[in-house]
Image (cartoon, rainbow, N blue to C red; front, side, top):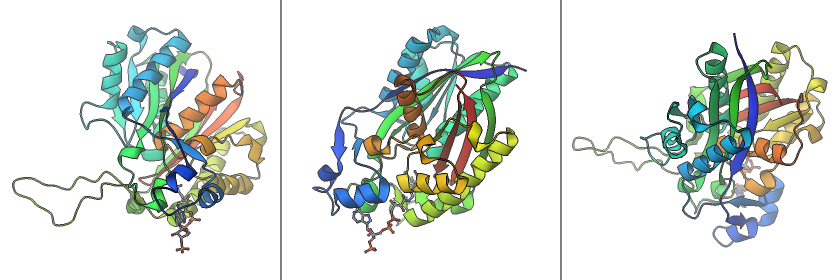
Length: 323
Ligand code: UT7
């Protein structure tokens, strides 16, 4: 058996920062409502850069930071619900752009849990001996599927990408994981529907193309499932909350994170938050946070970090990694 180590983190977000005040010119909302209900103050919105463009920048950044060559990458996974195309996959576009000619590449669709699920998949390929080096990216251009007339959703989401390079190592840095889905609740958070329209089918109802969410249901789901998942994870790893240096939760709402911290009886300072700056970037939020923490020197070798994603599907998943 082999083990997995996280070698590098990187991120890329669009230049354009859109503040809550900017949005109050588009829909009936206020900075006060958005910031007190969610913790969001601004988000980055693409002015043309698509999901693959940001992923390619992240992949190049990871190669540079890790000094692993493109030819030595044997797996690329992109977690996204907003790919440029259904095919080719975003991961294949990355593979071509960086010249990772020996890699196989595919996308994963698990919404806000996407990065955690994808890192788990990469770990298994590395652990089994099939791969040595894997690039795992979470990336979204959610602005493509946000309804900019719906104040209940358009204030929440942002665009961005983040990723990690995982390599075979003597050190076991992927310590434990806990992954779940409940498809019976899937219609509580939808987007990007494409009904069958062809020469023989012409449905009357329009596609549910834009993101729609029953916010209260998802809030209550997240505040029940995330603490339970983290408790299970700690048990699996025979660790206690005191052994954990950081929790990097999916950045959906700072109030969700406050409830999770309280339920776990963990100090809120251990929960890294950057939602104020980026909003909810779905699969990208956890790796963007990890990259920021790494760049700011907050992540130190040997530290134990819980990553925890939750959202569309519905899906939720957590893992303990060691830096
Ligand atoms: O990443 C995927 C996972 N997603 C999540 O985890 C999201 C989880 N849910 C949430 O974070 C919260 O439920 C929201 C932030 C989405 C909403 O917060 P809330 O405290 O649950 O608000 P609400 O939906 O209960 O709405 C309260 C009021 C409503 O007005 P009435 O019916 O009380 O008159 C809304 O119409 O706030 C109104 N409202 C707004 N007002 C100003 C909703 N959006 C806005 C807005 N500006 N942008």
